[in-house]
Length: 313
Length: 202
Image (cartoon, rainbow over all chains, first blue to last red; front, side, top):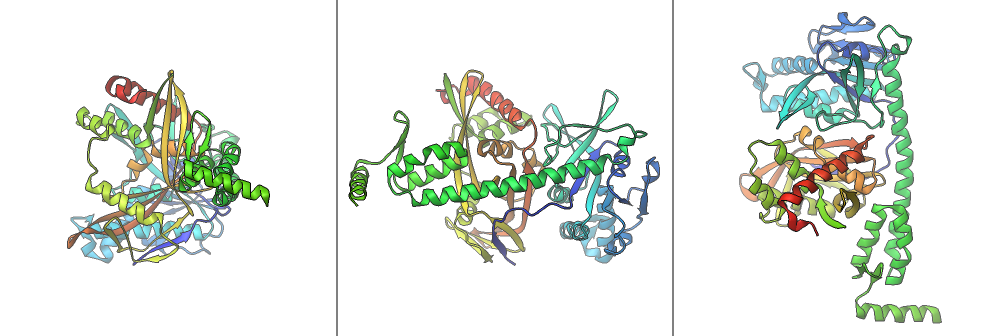
């Protein structure tokens, strides 16, 4: 058992996504999920018949129905919908207790059983991802009181909810406002969400409109596109930071540090922090009144001598 | 113009206080005035941070710092940026006051900032519901915030030894309107400070 530490690397191109869609019962979560690209719905909730735009469905009565799915089985599909994530975890819990009765007590999972649940659910999602599929996890909504506020969150059992929050690249909730259904990804003080696509609230088109047909497919694509834009930005930002850090590492005198101040200001807070860190390492302090770094007197004298020496050379 | 210096943990401390009907004002004020000594959990967290700050790539069965040892009883993997322990500030003008927000991230890689947490129980909603990640993204101009969460407990045989039995990676991203949320949280803190912490306002 060990912690493996690797060097941070830039993110790779996003070609598949895990998205959570949650909301209260009867708000058309399943219908919205069916508008994803080439979907296959794993119907743990036995409720897919209610969706007017129903497509391919596997009715799941026990976990073994999905446990042995292969890449070949899923080849015709681009998106796998788990409906609902809560019911899927219930089915997995039953399977775990059946396989090892010591992992259950009174029908509920023990602590070790929960560990198994988290590991196996996470492995299931990774398997689907390894097939290159988008995964849409549909979840019911729960309300939690916090002081005078009510917070909307996933209605999923115990510790396994934490695994879903980890696995979700994006998480949106469906709500009706003045008769219009909206899909919102941004978190608020009263609701959990993940919005890496930086999407504004999205009005969900009427179910009988042509725009509804591929609504979620477009949302998933927009999110992927945005994440890939961020990847490019991330690469450029890291390269600029690494270059500036190297330059700061070579700075030895207070004049060198002061000469880098303009670039640090332009670069932003990270650059300023890196310069400040280097200045501190060298024993320099920032003189607010003068608007520049100053060296302690002894160091200043040495710097002056070094500058003279350099000029002479 | 008056000024106020505030940290992400100050902002979250006030938010948790306001959301908890049973929380005592005196305890919050002592915390915000830095009058309370560091708890065991805080010291353990600091030790893990210190160990990770100098940690090199490779496989580690144990990490040690500040007199504490962390033994890994689960396999975990994290990618650690080379730039670690960076402190930055950002000024906001809020209701006629210059509010300086102070943030210290454990690591930074381009537009991603990382924060390490030691906890006895992984509670994703507590992390996601916090303002710490919003504030750090805003202060550092980053797009992605990542927690490396170490779930552990004391070893019964040695109080200076902790067992890590789970490592979690949890991420959040910048979203439209995040800066307005941060400003609103700062306004709430400023309103509170004007009444209860006037000494903090210069």
